[in-house]
Image (cartoon, rainbow, N blue to C red; front, side, top):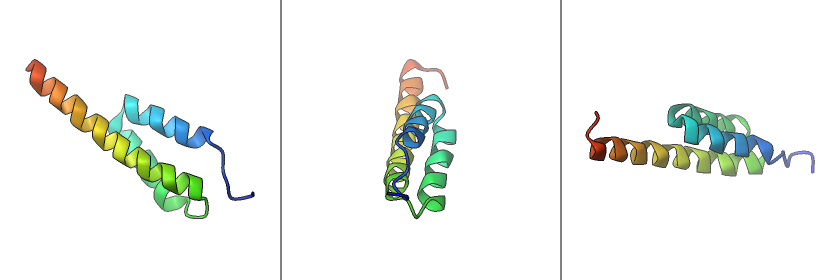
Length: 69
């Protein structure tokens, strides 16, 4: 039970990834690579990285579709 972690840390990561995908990517990488002893953080760190990349691509497509690059 000592290495389970709390769910609030990944939730903050997802919120950061929505607001700023670059910072979310860094946050996810920190969770994934620095918190190797906590499986919850490792799993969500990987998902936050994927989510940040997805948000970045979607925002880029929307900006390109609107015509404001």
